[in-house]
Image (cartoon, rainbow over all chains, first blue to last red):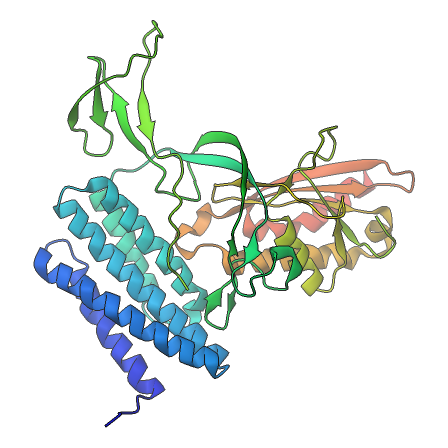
Length: 249
Length: 142
């Protein structure tokens, strides 16, 4: 027998899922329990997306927008737990990247911040976690790229031909520019406030000619590459840009 | 600039002799924001094709060109434009980046009918966009 689920049931279920997930977003929790929580969250995110699509079908914009915030908030906590798992498994760089995912998913959930409780508390949890678990990055890479304008992800026409505005929420979907064509690289800069905080320095050279992991400070069994320059100089390896986009819609 | 245009959106290299104009990638977005606020804006060329994406948390906005007529007779147009841009940026800026969110904007004003221009550059917090109208008025009266 099919059971009808109401709007209130979905909200209640979301609140329970969120509370359980937040309880696992603490470093000391058991890693196997955290992995199980990540799996459960993947399913819960998909369920809420399905409810969102139903709301979109019924042209219920307000509900679709709320469910958009729900699945992005759950994805944020999921990424936060995944970040902790990565750190426990010595995958520090991936752990940082997952942590940035958690912050960015939260940014999208916050498009509905007036309808969500406890967002600032969760944000502060992430701030404290970043300060305790990761170094204070001073500089990041910030490339400048010349590109085409691309298409609107909502109506699939060239971005200049529709009324949707990038970054705003329309019936549970954030407008984004897709299919942008790379024309040429313009510049690369080291900046304090990058758009993508995944673009970090990963390795630097030491005075004795070896490379060192910039995050863990661990000496690596990797000699500095000889680039034919005789003067003393520092080598560094970094992430110039990332192409993975978050599954926010 | 046709007679209907109230604000012209200029490319970054509007003063150069480069083969192509290069616009900040926010140009179409700002055009939509202005149009939806009832302001008639347009580009320097028919259809911009190349855009610079700068992956920093700052908002790099297109250069705004305010004509003498708008400056003198339609002061509310550029005030409304600045408010519409501020409202959009406030709404869509990342929640977790707080005070890191900032704006870079250059405004060129036509000081007289003979097309003498003066410009002002703003680089600061989003809220400061509201006060820019006073600076525009000041350079117009210098």
